[in-house]
Image 1 (spheres, rainbow, N blue to C red):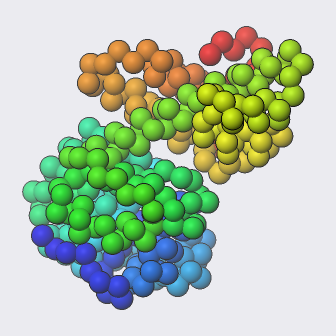
Image 2 (cartoon, helix red, strand yellow):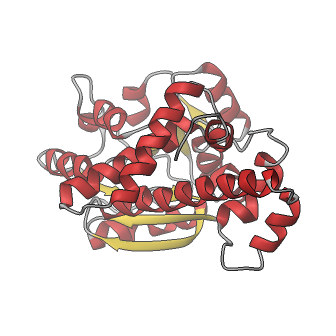
Amino acid sequence: MTSIPTQGASRIAFFGLGKMGLPMASRLVAAGWTVTGFDPFDGAREAFEKAGGRTDGAAARAAEGASVAITMLPDGKAVRTLLAGPDGIAAKLAPGAIVIDMSSSAPVGTRDLAADLAKDGVVLIDAPVSGGVKRAIDGSLAIMVGGDADAVAAAKPLLEAMGTSIFSTGPIGSGHAMKALNNYVSAAGLTAACEALQVGQSFGLDPALMTDILNVSTGRNNSTEVKLKPFVIPKSYTSGFSMALMAKDLRTADDLARHQGVAAPLSRAVASLWTDALADLGPTADHTAIDAYVAKPGKDA
């Protein structure tokens, strides 16, 4: 198996220079690696070049001879298309290359893709992240890594340039399973917090005071700590993480429960609620706009 190149070696390809991918790839450059980035949007490539990275307007050329390919794409289908579709780049990578899928992909699909790539001598590990754009910028992401232990160990220096909490979760697909379940818990907490504020405010409670009390009480969660005051109470809904991506992750968590034969009734209810919210508010809505959806008359979560 090919090892991770040392800093300065120009054998890393990074696919997906969006809100999360751009700062993550930039952290690798800042840590001393030479990274060739690809994104279909000119503006994304230009931003990465300003951060010191190299870019190519063709995915196949970016992948040519790379020992490591990192994907940060919308979902597992996009990852499969990039790697193993009719024009897949897997064949362009160096023999024994490692692919690190940092997207939020479906875990069962990740296992299937790993088996397909292995036929061509390419090793896939899944390493989704949590922490949002702010922690992507400062390199403090939490990263959940599944896959072959040797490949995970080889990838660790790269992952440590992007995150401060690196968890080895087990076999291939386990990182993506953990990410989906984490986002389910996060979305359930946000939904509950928004509903609580709405009920309390209708009774005369101040929502900012409610948030302060929640944050020193047993109701405290990530949403009460970092989302209510900046994004929900002022109704700005500008956290930077889309409702479409959260709804997708919730469907992934629900699909995983179904695949494992676990009833998970709350997971099913939350996934359904967010799917309906996405249909109502549209694909450009921020995920914190779930507050606006559950506040609509006649909405029973």
